[in-house]
Image 1 (cartoon, helix red, strand yellow):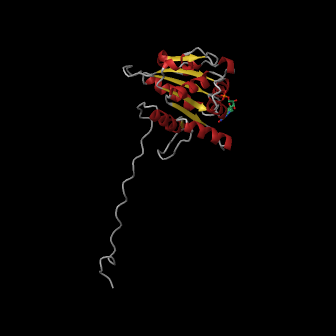
Image 2 (tube, rainbow, N blue to C red):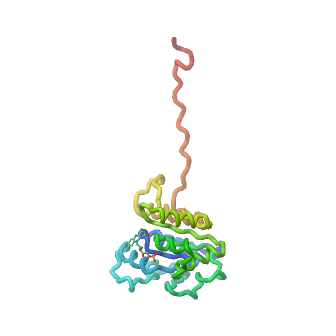
Image 3 (cartoon, rainbow, N blue to C red):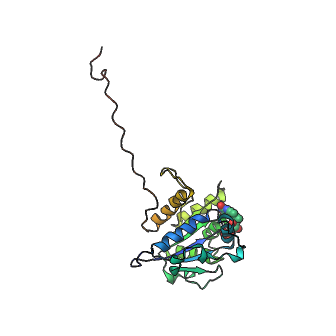
Length: 221
Ligand SMILES: Cc1cc2nc3c(=O)[nH]c(=O)nc-3n(C[C@H](O)[C@H](O)[C@H](O)COP(=O)(O)O)c2cc1C
């Protein structure tokens, strides 16, 4: 059931062609379920990855982003075409609470880092940077070349949150969904959206003190 929209915010989400479209789909689902509005754009490569990773029996052109989300959640989902440069995410006056590119391919990351704005995903990121609003990118690649690392450093220096899709294992995941939720939870933490996707790390209790040896108490020799 969708949460009340009293504190609803508006988020711009871009899917690009990195592996891990599950991260993007889950993020949008959680935001919509919490009553937030999501403006979603996908690159052509992202649509290709969706077909492949979601196992869709559709061509890239046939991918319908809206249909990827449960019907009750679709009310506050706005899907934009990649070339829709007049859409809200392309404008600084739209005032999104945050913009998230997830997954973020190395190509999109490079173009954002260098201000290319050649499509709506890149333009939305460019707008967030120029307006000083939160921008989170979730890159997925391994190994990382110097080009990738330099582009990430460039973005981090601009205040962009570079949050690689690197799930931890300390929450003892049992399923792929747990790994996805780990990364999505990290994104939600950075955009200020409450969630209970992951059990938070708690410092383990100190081990009990070892039994005192009689030798320490001067009972022996
Ligand atoms: C199934 C699949 C998985 C891919 N995984 C990655 C990846 O993890 N990281 C990456 O940077 N590119 C990946 N690519 C390649 C990008 O999709 C490709 O470089 C594309 O041009 C990126 O375009 P975009 O940045 O406009 O989305 C993948 C492509 C496919 C088809």
